[in-house]
Amino acid sequence: MAIRTRFAPSPTGFLHIGGLRTALFSWLYARRHSGVFVLRVEDTDLERSTPEAVQQILDGLEWAGLVQDEGPFFQTKRFDRYKDVIEELLAGGKAYRCYCSKEELEKMRAEQIARGEKPRYDGLWRERTDSLPGVASVVRFKNPLAGEVVVDDVVHGRVVFQNSELDDLIIARSDGTPTYNFCVVVDDMDMQITHVIRGDDHLNNTPRQLNMLLALGQRPPVYAHLPMILGPDGAKLSKRHGAVSVLQYRDEGFLPEAILNYLVRLGWSHGDQEFFSIEEMIRLFDIADVNKSASAFNLEKLTWLNQQHMMRAPAARLVPVLRWHLEREGIQAADESQLEQVVVSQRERAKTVREMALNSVFFFRAPVAYDEKAVRKHVTAEVLGPLAEASNRLSQLAEWSAPAIHAFISGFAAEKGISLGKLAQPIRLAVCGGTVSPPIDATLAILGKTEALSRLTRALAVWSA
Ligand code: GLU
View: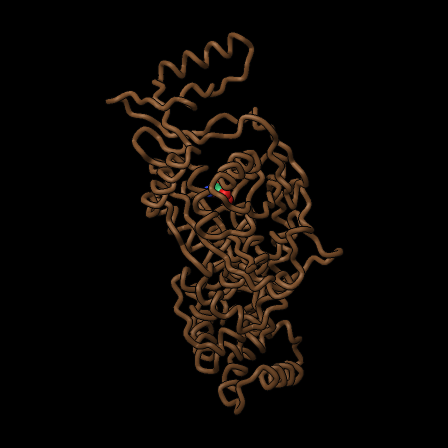
């Protein structure tokens, strides 16, 4: 049977790092087994779901490359189907209408509490066949009264629930709308999900869902409930731990493959290997190897992995990402090969692509001012003459490449009896405005002859005035 997994986010907030990990594990499992990864948007909570959150989740998944094979399916578009299944359960005697009023339910609850019992629906309408005309009813699922429900969870092992602990769940509200756990069941059935991989905050829903699936004549899927991701302080990862929206990591210059690499290691390992390419994750990941203890989010480690991925990626992989970050700085950089050279010369100095972009702005935007302190230090009266001459002779250089520029500058410095640094720093200041750039030969080569010389000429004019 083909493996079918799903990711079923509720669009009540942004896609956060925990949700992305759930999506990743479902996606990896499907990919590894040449299965199908389904995306289902659980948007039945009309008050809390927003179209912005839906868009944000879709964008986050797309950015991360966790693209679904089927869907997105929206639960709000499937209400007719849920209604049909409710009718089917009613007709089969597996569900019933309950006409209890709010007051009756409250009374029931108060009496149970007074008797020291756990409050639960007592099954008042379970066996009744009459109805109360004019009174709106809810529909309840007839949960088995006795016996146990065993969840053989891939991560948590055997978890046993007593049916006596589960009361008859409302599956349709009095206005006819289906409830959450019921929609999940119908969807998992219709979408033929073979492996339900989700956060372990849903483990307690599983016995109810299992009972409903069985009542519908289904073979239950395999369940794998993933441990939570905690913040560094040990509490469940949340907004107050800083950046938690997946798109925020994109904006901060993280590579999706680095984030996925980081996430795959939360709860799963392959020996002591830390670096994984996407292909390796697909080849090596197995849901059966996930352990059940929660893991803490560690931004330093994510940053370290990001740097590792930046260093190991083919330069061409980073070009579109760099271009995107430059665009956010208002820079349109079109020249593919120039961008590639920027990547090669800059990547080891940056931990994120955003940092690399910010360090590289000067390649695309001529300095409008020069670091004053550095000018005082490096642009001395003695160096101005040689600088002007160097600029002149650079303009006659036949080949504009880093090795040719290097050969010229070191030869020129030796000829003038000045150190390379004494010459390179003012040149750097002239073309970058500051003192931080890749080696000066590479910097000039990447800028291109015309641009480099025009910047030198302009700086000389400013400094000689
Ligand atoms: N919609 C649920 C959530 O966002 C997931 C439900 C499921 O995976 O079964 O937490």
